[in-house]
Image (tube, rainbow, N blue to C red):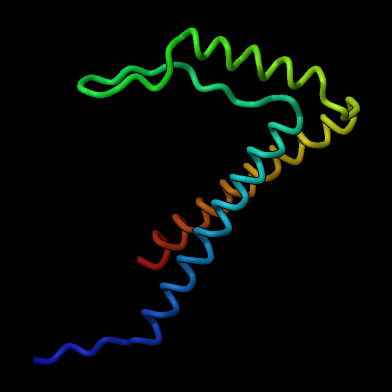
Length: 111
């Protein structure tokens, strides 16, 4: 018994996966960038893992939070521009979530 591979379908799935991954990553990156522009830079808290390294110390986290707050204060943007950037970030994150949920839905629906 020979198995025949439908190469056109394989290429279609590959291209769709690459495009959707690119769109999701781009939307997430745009969302993060707009958060920083809005003066709400996400600061990651220290995390320690067993048998691994410490990501950052609490002192470094405090310093990063202080630097982010200082940068937000000297931003040349008006309050309205910061609010628009924040809403844009939320929109980008929402669209990214929709892309991921659509992909999951397609997998479940066509399985």
